[in-house]
Every structure is written in structure tokens, then in C-alpha cells.
Amino acid sequence: MNETHYQARRQKLLASIEEGVAILSSSPLKIRSNDTEYPYRQNSDFYYLTGFEEANALLVLVKTKEIERSILFVEPYSDEFALWNGARLGVEGAMKRFEVDEVHSILEYPNHIKEILREHIALYFDFHDDSNHLKLAQQSAKELRESRGVKRYIRSFHDVTHWTRSMRLIKSSEEIDKIRYAISLTALAHHEAMKQCQNGLREFELQACMSYIFLSNGAMNEAYGAIVAGGNNANTLHYIDNRDVLKEGDLVLIDAACEWELYASDITRTFPVNGKFTEAQRAVYEKVLDVQLRVIEAMKPDVKRDWLQSYSEELLCQALIDLGILNGEVSTLLEAKAHKKYAPHGIGHWMGLDVHDPCPYVDESGESLAFMAGMVMTIEPGIYIKAEDESVPLKYRGIGIRIEDDILITESGCENLSSMIAKTIEEIEEMCKS
Ligand code: GLY
Ligand code: MN
Ligand code: MN
Image (cartoon, rainbow, N blue to C red):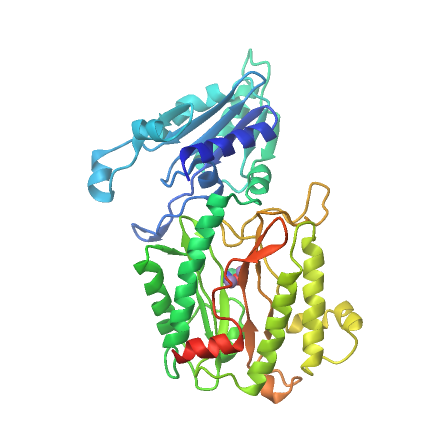
């Protein structure tokens, strides 16, 4: 992605907001232990508008009737920092690289912010931003309001993420390429896990073989904490302990994926530890797969996300009846939410710069959003039957299955971006053998 893409996004944001000043902050550094930090990950909205990955930076957008300006505040270059951590871009480097109107040192920000806000009537920021930079802007706005001779002052606050995240809903072809690349590495990792899996391994050993694939291909970060859940562990939806022994006759559910240039992938596969599905596992797996394929088939422009959710619940409910896990009429069971005991989570979520991309699910009037070409959503039905659930036939107890792919809405329908990852029973058993 070159600088013009980010510039075009800033212009689009400026065109959508009213007169005022927008402030977007980089992510804060977070201490992990004593003086050691967590690996740094840029704030997704800030990155979307700048492509800048350094910490302690600010983007300030200014809009009046006459002018629109983009101002970047960055950490200055320092020899000392360069010695220990590597060189920062600094003010001059940032001025050269970014197509912004001004770049200043972040150390100068307190001297600039009051002048920037003077005579403006609206402040746009992320309501979750609790940085000192933003607090200073709010304080400056308050002081301006109380200053003599100031005719106009900030009198409204707006959540800037309302605009940035609506923009993030539709992915450009460059963004889709990054998602595709993340998925291609994730595909290698899932296939490797299927090949390596055997009775007696620890869950973390499968995690390790996937992490090796990610790192050795340059994907420095996973998109989220890997779930490697053998047997009944799959029934804990966010199981990340990953320390149990994988047992003969059990399934293993792996929900793990990497990030590429900050773009996520999000993939789940469930397969037998010994490479061969039992009859009961096969029965549940085929139902989950059938639901997933039918839901994906229904995805196209103008279909509403809420409708897709209801449709998937109907299909899952019918699947649970077919398996003999629920008894009764679909409509009555849906009404009573009986299926939620075995299929408790939603059918999918937006995916992009964040694995759970925080883009809107409803339009301006609160109606469920209709799909449009360029949107990316995961489709991840699951059926989870706890080992201790005596209301279910014995053969199914302890089975937890989820199948998750990443789907791009296209002009004519949709494309499963992760269709290369083994998914049918035959494909999985074949991959496990190799
Ligand atoms: N891996 C997180 C999710 O599937 O939503
Ligand atoms: Mn997901
Ligand atoms: Mn997932």
C-alpha cells in the first residue's frame, strides 16, 4: 500500500465529517513485566489512515470551510533510541515519507494543540482513547472556551470511529491481497498441524508447529491467541490453555491464524487426533459442514447480516434435531432458544485490520446492514456437546466441532478466501495421513 492510499483515506474521512478537528492516537506501549513491554501493535484506525507503525504518534485532521489539513506528530529521531531499539523515522523522515501537510515532534504537541483547536466548534476522537494527548486536547478546548476574545469554541464531541470503521467495512483490493496472503500461510499451518497430529502429543506441540510456519514465513504476529483444544476442551469456546494431552479417539479443534501486515485471517478446523473420524464424530461434522456450506452459498450483495444469522440458527437447530440432540419443531425450539445450548455463538464477524473488525453491523437507521462487494466476514458454525451433558446420546458427549472460513462478498456472490484448506471429511483424512 503506498502513501497515496492513506492520503485518500484521510481525504475521504475529512469529506465525511463536518467542520472541526479530529485526533487519532497510536496505540500505547504496554508493560508486560517490570521494564519489558509487550510486542507493539499499532492501533488499527490510526494505521488505516497513516500506515505508520511507530508508537507515541498522533494524527490531527483539521477541517474548516476553506481548508483541510493533515498534521502528524511523531517521536523525534534520537541516537540513544537508535542504539538500543533501532532508528525511528523522526520528523524529517516522516515528512519525506507521508503525504501530510505538516509533521512535528510529539514533544511540540502541547505547544500546538491550543492553536489548532482555536475557533473550532467540534472535536472528533475515539471515545476509548484515554491517552494524555487526548486529555490535553480536551483540557485545551475547555480553556479556550473560558478565554477572552475567543468567538467560537469546541461545543460538540464526536466518535471518530463511527466514520473510520464505516470506511473499513469495504476492503480495497490491496487489503484483500494482504488478507489472502495471511490466509495462505494459515493454510500451510493448519495442514502442517493435521500432518503432525498424533495420539499423545500435547496441544501446545501442535500450536508450536503452526507458530513455526507463521514465523518462518515472516508473519511475526498471530491474529489472536491460538485455540488448540483436544476432545472436550473444544467445548470451552475461548480455550487457550493448550496444555492437555491429545487422546486417541478424540477430535482436536484448532482456531489459529496469522496476521500479515496487520491484516488478520481467522480459521478453524476440527479433525481426529488419529486421523480417522468415528461414526458419531462424522455425523456431527457433516451437519456442521452442511450448515457452513449452505450459509456461505447464501452470501451475496443485498443479503442482510441479521437474516444470515437467523438462517444459520434455523439450519443448526434442524441439524440438532436430525442428530437426535434436540426434539420438537424447529420454530418452537428456536423460539425457546433451545439450540443456543449447543450452538451458542454468532455465525460470524467482520474481519480485516482486526480479527473482530469493529465495523458497524447496522446502518444509520439501525437496520441490519446488507452485504456489499468488498466486505469480509467469517462464517463459523459450531456444535458443542459437553462431556457431562447426560441429556444427549452418550456417543456425542465430549464432541465440539467448529468450521471457520473467511468469506469475501463479491459483485455476483461471494468467494471463500480459505477454500484451499482441507475441510471435507475425505480431504481431512487424506491430509492427516500424509
Ligand atoms: N478466533 C476468534 C473467532 O473465531 O472469532
Ligand atoms: Mn472468528
Ligand atoms: Mn476463529
